[in-house]
Length: 427
Image (cartoon, rainbow, N blue to C red):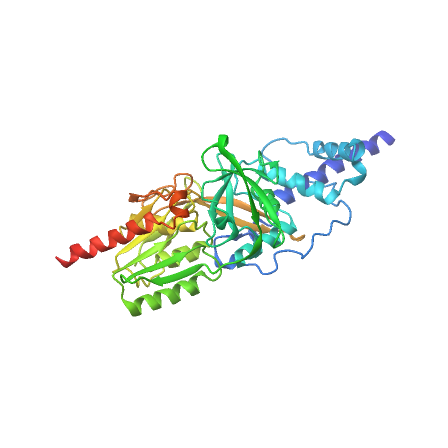
């Protein structure tokens, strides 16, 4: 009799814990929203503080039929859990919520995609602050490149740029701790911190044999994503540092001002722009592209979604140059790639970063979330942005020496090109 009860208990335990994992894997998918859409702005993504209290729920569950493609014994999960709780040397200090979130991070990171991450409530809240353009840190976008933590883009006039960090710099340690095997959200957590505190990054700009420690004093990062300038030579420069909440409004202001002055040419500076909202990129590209596809989302070999220009095209008749570099990523690659494919602008600088994937943000009741890659971006001509990036029409590098001496050969070349184009039209 007792033996039968034990068997039934084990069977029930297996059923319920399978359902738990299935809920984690498949639940709330339909509630996910495109990170790249404006509706992804979330003012209350998470609780203000992560409170690790309570008990483990849902340990015993039963799976829905036909959801698993392979036989998986989820009892192994709980066997490992119980072993840790029973035998780990520091078991009296184990926090079950942290242990649980850590297992979810491990499951998501096993996909091997640096842009697909699990975020606990605290990280989710910080992510929401990023979209709003306010946080405390060093002011740099980071990512994983060839399994190495890398500076994608230092933001203009922020602590990272002032300390001399450049797009493409490799980060081998944070405050003396190796970044080998680190995931992006963990690195962001370590680098960020209160204003006026310091963080030391072990940086290499020329290879691992030349690593140097750079201490950066954190500050409040509040950025306006668009800056405008009418040069004395009547060339209008619009610098877009991100595709964030304020970008469309500020860009429209710049366009209205530009139209009043009727410049000889336009320079769009997308250097060190790590990206942002998809529909903002489409709206901006549509100021040149009157009709047709701006970018395609490739979900699978059979499913592709072409996203068309939204109309307007107020700038289609202006000679345009676009500045790009290794720090231009994501939405900035959509804009530069589309203008290049339609021959509406001359791209000057260096090949872009190559971050051409679409993420959805799936939220959960406890304030945690998963940012999940669901598609790849293709330019209008069908070129894969991811990893390949966008190549410039005219390659011009900008060295650290140029930066330190306040020289900008990429901008100078763009100005030269626009002036040459105007000179040809004069004949």
